Length: 132
Image: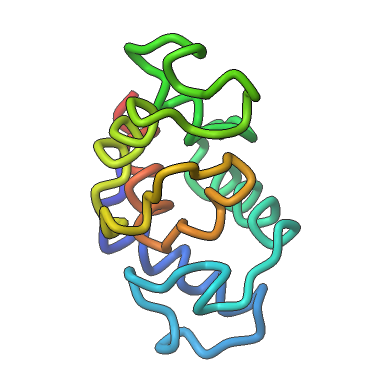
């Protein structure tokens, strides 16, 4: 099983190739969208590369579903089905401690969640999936 550093190096190389960047421009703390300029299709491509390289399966709504572990869908989202409840935001903070807590603002919409994702978020995801 790959360790955190090996996972990071693999993702760093994949992202550099996908996004036309130098590997040393990509750190664990890099936001995929804000810092690296990734788009939604790039995130999908990254997911496929992770599945291929690490033999794990990633659900398209992985972060929402993982945050919901232990709480109901009604507790995770407001009545609109898109906006995280305060309890849902707390679950996300626990799931993704690498993201600064102040990024999880009240009224966070599930469509804005990808803007928060960092390289480390995916490294931790791969590590969790490999342990399952």
